[in-house]
Image 1: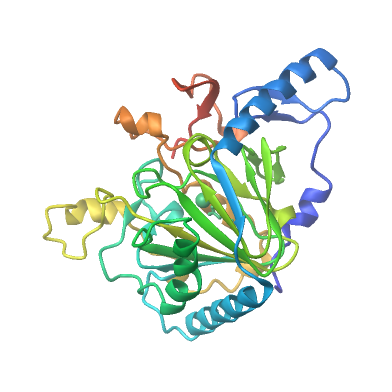
Image 2: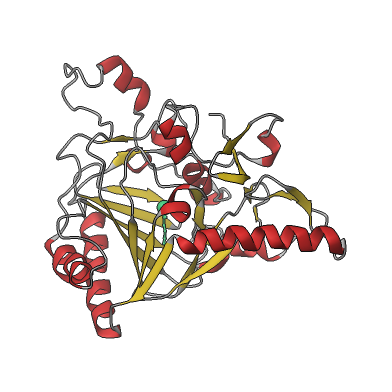
Length: 353
Ligand code: SIN
Ligand code: MN
C-alpha cells in the first residue's frame, strides 16, 4: 500500500536484539545474550510451563476446504467493496494503516476512540449503530461451526472481520472481558499466519519480544480461545507474521451485562456528559490528513495497545483500573504490577492512560 511503511522492514534489523532488555509476560526482565546457561534453563522452564497453560485453553480445527475458503474470501471482498462505497453504518467500519475492521451485530468503542482510555472503558455502541451480521456469515461460517459442535446455536451475536495487509499487526491485548463471553472463536482466510501469546511490544523503533507461544493460524483453520489463553495472557498478530494479505472473522457473544453507550442522551444508563468523555470522533470519519501517508505508520499499534480488557481477577474484584495490558517499557514504573491468585508466576503490567 503506497505510503505505508511495512513494519516488517523495521523488525528485520531489530528482533531478537542482543543486549536489549525485554520484559516478558511473567514480569521478568531479561537481556538477550548468548550464554547465562542456568538462568536460561530456569527461564525456559517457566516459559514452557506458561506455554502449556496457554495451550490448554486453545482448540483448533480445520473445517473449511480450499473451495469454501475461496467462497468466503469473495464475500469478504464484497464487504470491503461495500465499505469503500460508504454503504455501511458509521460504526461498522474502522480503518487503520494496514488493517481495517468491519463490525457486525455489535460494535464497541476502544483505543483512541475513548477520551478516557484504559482498562474496562470499552463500551458497546447502542443497538443498531453497526450493521447486522450478513447472511453469508451465518450460512457459510457460523452454521458450519455449530454443525461441527464448535459453538452452540445462537451463541454468536458479534462478527468482526479484520483485514490485514502485509506487515499489518494487532498489538498484544486481551479481548475485553466485561464485553465478551468466552470462548472467542476466529477463522482465518487468504493466507497462513500466526497468533502469538505473551509478546511485549516496544516502539520507536518497533520491537516485539519472543512469544510465550507461537500458534500457526492457517487459512481455513478455526481457533477457539478460552480460560488462560483468553483471559490471562495477551495475544497479538506480529507484523512479521502477516506476509500476505490475511483476514480473520472473529465470532463472539457479548455479555448481557456489557456496558453500552446509549444513543438517547436522556437515558439513565450513561449520562450525556459521561458519554462525551467516553467517545471521541472515530478516526475513520475524521477528515483525511494529506500528510499522513508520509509519516511512519505505527499508529495501528498505538491504537490497538489501548484496546484492553480487565483480567478475570480484576473483574472479580471490581478493579476497573486496568486491563491486562502492557505498558511501553519507557513508560513503566516500579510497583505497577498485579499478581493473579490463580497464576502465581505471572504478573500483569498495567498501562496508565
Ligand atoms: C485479534 O485478536 O484481534 C485478531 C486475531 C487474529 O487476527 O487472528
Ligand atoms: Mn483479540
